[in-house]
Length: 179
Image 1 (cartoon, helix red, strand yellow):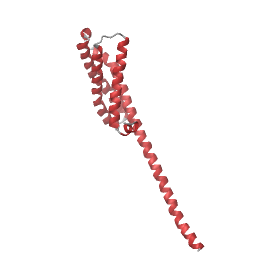
Image 2: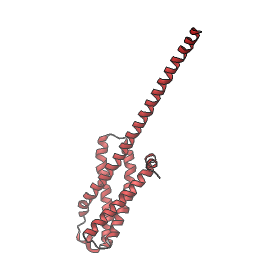
Image 3: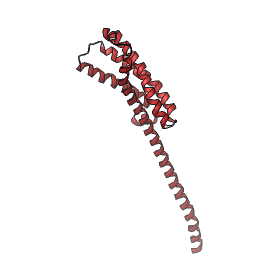
């Protein structure tokens, strides 16, 4: 699998970036946990956060595909709402993992604390959304460039053929006149 294969196959590109991105999230969080001396069971919470983040952003892809052809105002309104709702659901999974593997953590938190904890998750999902739309926009620009290059090459080829057709009768007439 080469980079050119990834560029051509957008579906494969999404899955590779999705896997690499969420794996990097888990690794960075794990390194942070090591720096702050979190208990060993925290890795289970991180794995659940990574897997649930991976799974919850898949529907965002399809929602964003639908949004791609909409007005920019619609996109600017719906993306933060979708990221926030997804972040709330994601925090439910993370909080349940904390409750299961970190024991007394969740019992100390009021139920409405999930809204506060969803803010950093919303920022992360907005970053994911920005990357998604950025890559999609870059691909659209690349396709436009390739189409412009093809059109330019076809125009030059047509121009050369036209000149050739104009020159051929002149050579024939000049040859006949010379004879």
